[in-house]
Amino acid sequence: MDELKTVHFNHPVLSGELIVPGDKSISHRAIMLGSIAKGKTEVTGFLDGEDCLRTIEMFKQLGVSIERQGKNVWIDSPGLQDWKTPTDELYAGNSGTTTRLMAGILAGAHVTSVMTGDASLSNRPMDRVTVPLREMGASISSETASELLPLRIKGTSLQAIDYQNPVGSAQVKSAILFAGLQADGTTSVREKTTSRDHTEQMFKHFGADIESVDGKVSVTGGRALTGRNVHVPGDISSAAFFMVAASMIEGSAITLLNVGLNPTRTGVLDVLKEMGASIEITNETDENGERLGTVNISHQQLKPVEISGALIPRLIDELPIIALLATQADGTTVIKDAAELRVKETDRIAAVTEALSAVGANIEATDDGMIIHGPTPLTGGTMDSYGDHRLGMMAAIASLVASGPVTIKDPACIDISYPAFFEDLERLVRHETNN
Ligand code: SPQ
Image (cartoon, rainbow, N blue to C red; front, side, top):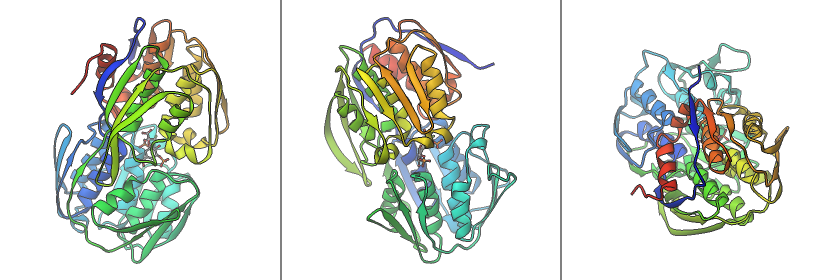
């Protein structure tokens, strides 16, 4: 039986300050580069969510020494050339990022391994990475015709390719770049719409031979990397839940500290501004190639918006919470060009539509997005997370504007990216800070 959690707030108002937990995408990449590089790497601000812990476990199985205390991680690696073949399967849990990026890393390492995952991950498409990696010479096999997990990867020598990425996906781009780091020659990836560039930033920080020109990213293989220190900024995808809450609820005004503001991830800020939200960004700074700063946000009556095209990869993971926001805007919001949502932890077009409809939202699913009519008063009810962390958090934020209690099915999945989510939510409702 799925666990249930009932959430109900009586006329909540959000205020106070919050330090946002570490960015999931950057935490994965910090552990990956720190393990590929020879020597010591220290990571601060690491996200101790389940997905990133899976990445740490995989490298330990490969013979990398990794110690962690909360958000601090110390890596001491012999370097990718000297990893050992793992004795057990490498279990990626629910993490698509771990699986797809590791496929590129393991393709060129001197080890043989089998990667597995949970039921959700075992249904997510892997051919988007296995096909280009095989073009580079990788030896990867799957037991299913459709290239699902488990994947068996026998590390081998790789050749550079010039790849036109048909999906706007940072995971595909990154898998190829990680393989390119180990290939003979210069590997290039071109994208029609630019996806998040944390891999490129982290490669530069660790001294890899990489450049990005006019939508084409190129890495030249063979350069030995050495350990570096990395600070992980807060996750804008986690901050987005509280940004939306503060924008929707009259009287709310919050300050989110340490928010990652990499321009390839800030689509949610653009959308909130276009909808009329009151946002001020202060204290902007850069650390290891990543912009971060403070986001001050308060309630305003919101307008509907159309979200499509190049904006989609810049806010792909925020679309569930933006759909909730749109239920409270004055008019019809249209989200299109977002068919990728159908192959995330769950089919996020179907799941968001069903979960929000269950509490009275006026929302329709389309092939590649959603149409949301607002403003609609939300009732209480049961919202299924479908085991998807972003759906679980969306349901909790929906409870803030719902007239009755909201019961969330399987709320434990939230630990994947935000283990302290409920504590932080209650803090803002009680007007406390966590610093
Ligand atoms: O790791 P996972 O499970 O794929 O996580 C998600 C998420 O919502 O946390 C997607 F389901 O984020 C992806 C994101 O959608 C993380 C990511 C990355 O770190 O490179 C890139 C995006 O995926 P994609 O397929 O568009 O490259």
